Amino acid sequence: MVATLLMTAIDSTLMGIEDNFKEAQDRQSDYAMTMLHVDNVTNNTTVVFINITNTGSTVLKVSNIDVLVNGSLVTDKIKNHSVSGSTTTHIWAPNERLYLELNLTAKTGDRVTVVTGNGKSATGVLT
Amino acid sequence: MAIAGTLISTTQKFSGDIQKKGISMGDTLLTEIKIINDPAAMPYNSSNKTLTLYVKNTGSIILPFSNQTVLVLINGTAFTNLTFVLPSTAQSWGPEVVMTIVVGNVQLPKNDYTLKVVVHGGVYATTPFKIS
View 1: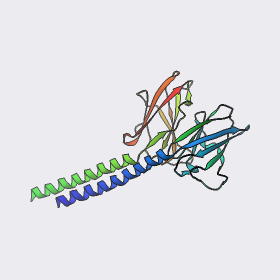
View 2: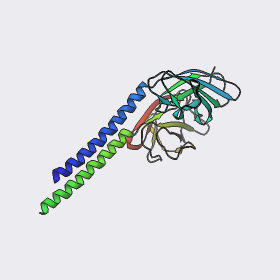
View 3: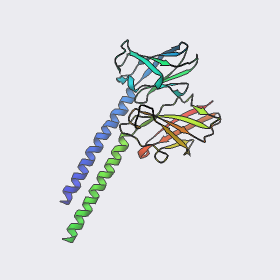
View 4: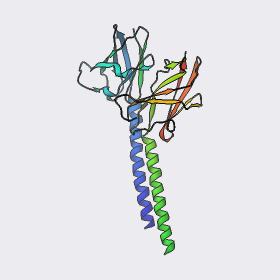
């Protein structure tokens, strides 16, 4: 009875920890394989245009992207996006280019940082 | 008989403790954050003495946030005047949500610093940054 109680508790606890450990490992692996490159950042008077390439080997989601301009979070200023020309998809696969339009006034030399859902980032400068 | 009863109740308590500890360890494994600030362009307001941090939940559980559960350290000194702002689209600090943390009463002359943010379960993220 005593042994059964203990074994049940230990068994279910270890299984739970093992699942969570595997999930943490997968997350770390995804992070290591995530890479992105800010190809260019341009603007007109009211809009900032950003092109970024997924240079890693993980599939990213556009809906989880964050953007900072000169250190301030401006994700809510994203008004349009496209992935390799498609405006309907939110899947950003390896070697595909993401295009973002932000309703924002900016100037040459401003720093633009793009952050993925798993926290990997790349920075470019507005030219 | 009494000894057997005591043994069983002790074992039950021990089993419960093992499971609680397991859940706690599991939560820690599922907790992860990243500081996503641009370290070369930190939003520091020297007039108001506020520093704005952006901390993304990159784990897979909802994180609690308050002055009691989140700790911000700059060069090892803890700052307790914290204001938490969730995006208008988020109900909680869930996975992939960026929490804005405004640190008040912080004086940062031009220099290099190390930032550490500690959350639930002692999980933390660090980043160097500069004020120039």
